[in-house]
Amino acid sequence: MEFFRRSGFGIARGLCLQGVALFCLAGWGLAAERFTVHENESGGVTVSLEGQPFMTYVIDQGNKPFLWPVIGPDGKEMTRAYPMKKVPGEATDHLHHRGVCFGHQRINETDSWHERESWGAKAKANQLAFIGSIRHDRYRTLAGGATAVIDSLATMLSPTNEPVLAIEQRLTCAVQGEHRVIDIALDLVAAHGPATIEDFKDAGLSIRVPESIRVDAKQGGEIVNSLGDRNAAAWAKRAVWVDYHGPIDGQTYGIAFMSHPSTFRHPSPWHVRTYGLFTANPFGLKSLGLQEESAAITLDSGERVALRYRLLFHRGNEQEADIEGAFAVYADERLAEPGAANDSADR
Image 1 (cartoon, rainbow, N blue to C red):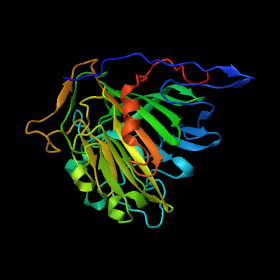
Image 2 (image 1 turned 30 degrees about the vertical axis):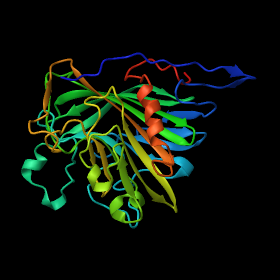
Image 3 (image 1 turned 120 degrees about the vertical axis):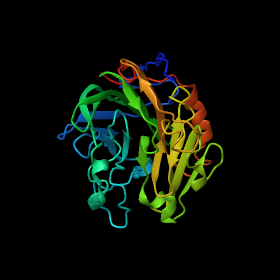
């Protein structure tokens, strides 16, 4: 069984020059970029960069926490708005694909991927019977500065609201040159007894891409992975990164999704679809056609699976943004773990 071995988190403290606090985080190449982080009226978290929106962590909609909106370079929205907001011309399929989120179709007979409204009037009793939720419990760290950090605890709940497992998550937002970055460190912890994580296609960490860059919109959107597979050929392939890019307001922007070498079952298989779903799924190896036997695992009490991914939002295509080079930098980094002391941001 594969599990993440915890490593330290090396951070270089910044210097104070002429009364202006400058921070430098090793590997990020940051200087005076300033993040602010605050809990909003709905209990979620709003992250701003130099006073402008960067992302919002939402906990009061759907059946699990998610990020929406996420703002990329030049102020462009990098996630679909539906179902949080209806935008003319935007696809309205799969309402459970909310922004950036984690879900799994079956852990201990619980489905946190779908929502009760996912199938509409066509819902079947045997589908609804498994629908559970992920409940946000509390924040351990909310911090701004050279980076923004949201460190939180959540609980996956069964259809009868019994705890299934704990979710420890640390989100770290940063700027790397022209790129905007969100690092996601997410641990699934068997804190309430053994947890069986089944082999399903619909499982993992996802982002639903903007309407105009999805391949099926036929506006020039493209998927490419680190192996050179493109569009539909990239589905279910294991790769260290996948890039989904296309036009937004007449210019090319993209989302690079990276699998860190320390993540569970690296390199991740990718449940990435031409209609706009973009998911890192290390759980469904049989369901994705990668092997004949089930890849289901059972965590004993106290055991955990650690997922480590980076979302990098960029201008241009994967070559213009040098995603291969950006991955090499990421692969070399020692990552902050959920619950780690926050040395990179103001207290």
